[in-house]
Amino acid sequence: SQQGEEDPQALSIQEGENATMNCSYKTSINNLQWYRQNSGRGLVHLILIRSNEREKHSGRLRVTLDTSKKSSSLLITASRAADTASYFCATDAEHVVTGTASKLTFGTGTRLQVTL
Amino acid sequence: AAGVIQSPRHLIKEKRETATLKCYPIPRHDTVYWYQQGPGQDPQFLISFYEKMQSDKGSIPDRFSAQQFSDYHSELNMSSLELGDSALYFCASRFTGGRGMNTEAFFGQGTRLTVV
Image (tube, rainbow over all chains, first blue to last red; front, side, top):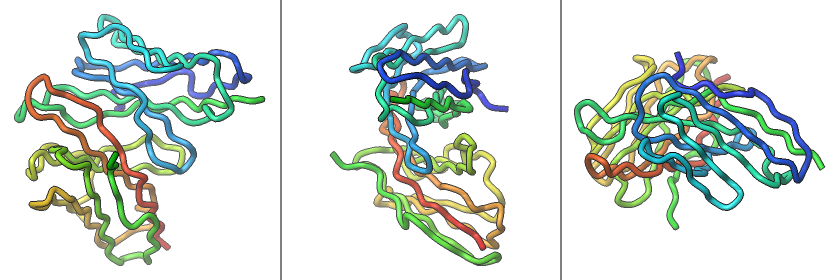
């Protein structure tokens, strides 16, 4: 089963509105990363938040992490049509052998549609 | 800045043929991941390497194999191709360094494999 579950699965908003996407996971993590993917294209890295961080900002993006609830949220403020894409969270933990980062486990993604 | 390079970008093969996908990680990155993404699906982990050694194995069919070479580039070899292998294949790289030095994982643009 997937480590991460995202909700909503689909979100449709108008340009200028804020979009909030949530991600939940099941096991302890080291890092949580958010990615954007346009249809059939590559995964673009947005932001990484470490397990000892609670909030992080990057431009119009704000990410929060609540390790007690095993959840994260991605807020996109003042959305634009160009933000239309699928958004995925991906978690990793400490690799049991190497001690470095384990594989990334992806959530199911939120499809965001921003209309003019 | 250098990104993760994947080749080829598109590949069309017939059933039972063999395909080789290549990945050139960002310089000085010590970890490579391979993922498969079917239409409308989230990325599924196949295999990863840390310092040229296999570090994790996911849902990779026995017909697939991968390795990382001395120059850190990686290849995913897929034999006896089936129609269900049609998907986007992504490679990602990151520098993990050691315990606590976990950083962003960056993805390539992917190889779109179509099996006919």
